[in-house]
Structure formats: C-alpha cells, structure tokens
Image (cartoon, rainbow over all chains, first blue to last red; front, top):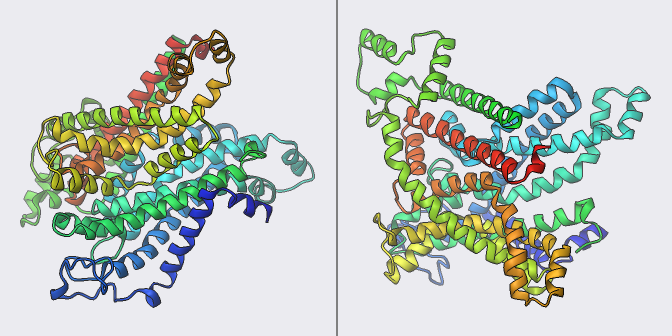
Length: 277
Length: 304
C-alpha cells in the first residue's frame, strides 16, 4: 500500500495512471460505449467533419472515427502487452539460463546477445515481418522478438550478480535442485527489475507496433488499429485533418501515460533510488 | 594495440553472427525466389531449373551460405526482383538522402536534447526540471509519423513556409525536426543526469569560488564535461536515427534507405531486404568499433 501511494505520489504518475484507467475502460467497454459500429460504412458521411453526431468526424468510408478510436484502444493495448510479454518471457528465460549455466554457455550466450543487439530494433522487426508476412499478430511477434536481446542482456547481468550471492550458495548447499534455485530464489529477486523494464518498455512497444501498422506491415484495413488508421487517413489529411488528428492523439496520450507511470515505477522499485522522490 | 586487435576480432565475429541470422531469415522467408522474380509469369520446368541454377539455389545449403558471406563482404547482394538492378546500385542511389536526413535529425536532436537536459540538470528537482523532463518524455512518447503529418499540415499546407517535396535544404527542415524530436527526448534525459553529476564536482565549486558568473560556469565548465558522455553513445543514436529515417521517409515520401526497405518487404523483394539489413548492421558494428577505439585513444585509462 505504501508503494502504491508512493507510486501515485508524483502528479505526473497520478495523471498517467488516471489516463491509463480511462483508456483501459474505453477498451474494455468499447462495445457498450462506442456510439456507432466501428465498421459501419456510409456513402453520405464520407470524410464528414466533426459534428454533434460524430464528435471526431468520419473517415473516407463514412465510418465514425470516435468509435474506431475506442475500439483501437483494444488493439493497441493488447498488442503492446503481448509484445512486451514475448520479450519478457523469452528474454528473461534466455538471460537466466545462460547466467545460471555460467562458463562456456554464458560466454556463447553473451556473444549472441551482443550480436543481436547490433540490429537496430526496427530493422530486426522488419526483417522478422519479411519472413512471417505482413499482419497484426505477426507484427506483434516481430516487435516482441526484437526486444528479446535487450531483456536478455539486462536479466543476464542481474542474474550474474545474484548467482554470486550467499543465499544461492546456501540453497545449493542444502541440496536444492536447479529448478528450485531458479524459481524460488532467483526469480523473486529478479522480479523488481523485470517489472521495471517491462513497464518502461510497454510505452515504446505500443508505439513500435503502431509504427509497423502505419508502415503497412502490421494491422491491415479495416482493422481499427491507431497506426493503421493514420496510414489510411494519410492521403486525405489535406481535406480531412480529423482522420489523422484523433487516432494520433489517442496513441500519443496512451504512450505518454504509460511512460509517466513506468518512469515513476522504476523510481519506486529501484533499490538504489529508495528514499528519493 | 592488443585491445584494438581483440575489438576488431570481436566485431568480425559479431558481423558473422548477424549475417548468419540474415541468411537464415531469408531462407525461411516464404515463396520461391524464382517465382517471386517472375511475378506470376508462367515458366516451364526447364527454364525454372536453369533460373534456379543461375541464382545458385541448386547448390548445397552450406555452399550457398559460404557464398552469401563472401558476397556480403564484397557488397554483392544480387539483383532486385522488381527493378532487376543490382541491389548495391539501388542502395547507393538512396543512401545520400538518408545520410542528409540522419545528419539533419542529429543536429536538431543534439541541440534540443542538450538544451533540455542542461536547463533541467542545472535547475534539478524544481518545476523547471519537471517541465523539461515532461517535455523530454513527450518527445519519447510522440509517434514520429503523427508528428510528421502534423508538421506537413501546419507548415507546408496551411502556412506554406516550406515545400512538402523536393531535394533542397527547405525540404529537409520538417523531416529533420521529425527525426530530431525522436532523439531529443532520450538525449535530454541522459544530459540532465550527466549535468547533475558534474555540478556536484569540486571543480565547479572552485569555478564559483573564483567569482565566475553562473552562465560562465555552466557554459565553460559544466556543459563541456556533461554533454560529452551522452554524445559518445552514438551507437544508440544510430539505431534511433535508422528508426526515425524509416518512418520519416515514408511520411514525407522522401527517397532513402528506410523507404527502400519498407517497399522491399511489402513487395517481397528479398535481395533488397537482405542488402539493406546486412549493410545497416555493418554500419552499426563499424560505428561502435570506431567509438571503442577512439575511447582508448582519448582516455588512456580505458586501456587498463
């Protein structure tokens, strides 16, 4: 409880948490709250400007942008969370295994991580999309996999410092098996670091998947994903700027909120920062 | 000398691993290269076999792999499936545009990031710090493709201050800002932390004690020492610049490596994808190697 109050003690984090709560609510309750069907087209509402009936205006096919932005929250949040989950599971697993294995396993593993970090993340993600093919979940998988080396490096470093500690030695001395040592002793101690890097990464993961959709490599029309909506509205920005303003604003506000909370969380959970802020 | 040699070997090993990954990925990519090249044109079995032989696809896997590595070292990536031109010619034609954009973005990013970071660091833990760091976080959270679209809409379409398209300096301003803001956020945070560290040093106290003005202390003593460490993280900046270029070139319909890559993926033009990825990793490894070697020369303690 103390941690939660400390977490929300900073105004930025409190605002971020509130915004996130709103976005989450809109995403979950989109079918109830959205004023129109996200895919209902209408010839006479094509590129209709903002009005009392359509607060955010309509897109090229006469679809209500507000409803699409609400549904878009589902895709963006789901994709962000699943990409980070992929990075976390595979990255942490790899990092723990090589650091705990030690010796030659660690040396080879560390070299592999270093090499994979030489791919700029967007290039690695695009390469993976080239192999898997264009699509919403392939893009999520690509972004998730491109984050694996980063997670693996951090987890490996943290595990290495833990493995040398007395409690691991003691656990080994009383006859604990490898699985028990990793699950009962290492993982609980790694948890704060993993939580911090996961939250810090979530914002950029949401942004990154939207970027791939914007480039045409992720979500495809008519999916109401924010990046894909921006891509679709690109041609008509001149005549109907609302097709680009609202999906982009939703994306920006969501990522900013996640980053505000993530920043504060890293301050609260990081033992070196204790007593500050 | 020993250090440089071991770094060089490390870099070669790294390139070897990354290129192996690229080779593996391209072999996993769906679709037969010959059919992709023909784009739906019917072909007889005999012609198919001869086309496969010409591309070297009939050779054993290991031979293909070794010849891929040898070709990569020589910069030979074959011909594009679409334009039939050598991949290297295509990349060489697009490269200057990406370089211009990267340079423009780096200038904007460094200027803005340094100003944000220095102001926040000097006034740390106050409201100015909060505003600067919130701005930096906003820079990190801003979708650069959205920012680019807004800049075009406001400054090119509505106000008509700069052209949307073109190859002149004017046409580089908005794309540079788009890429620059992407970098400025992260850089601002690094510079801030670095400034806070430097401002606590004895030589800053000495400078104040000598009666120097705050502006002089910050400009002459603190900034020089605080801005350099984050700048040496050029490796990270490079990754961000590439990311920025891919998106910005698409938004502004500018020619460049990033757009070439995205187009190639959409058109399944695998030789181009392979060429761009191999060269990008090579550039990344080379930049990091140079920085690493330069460290040792500038700061002899690194040698130890």
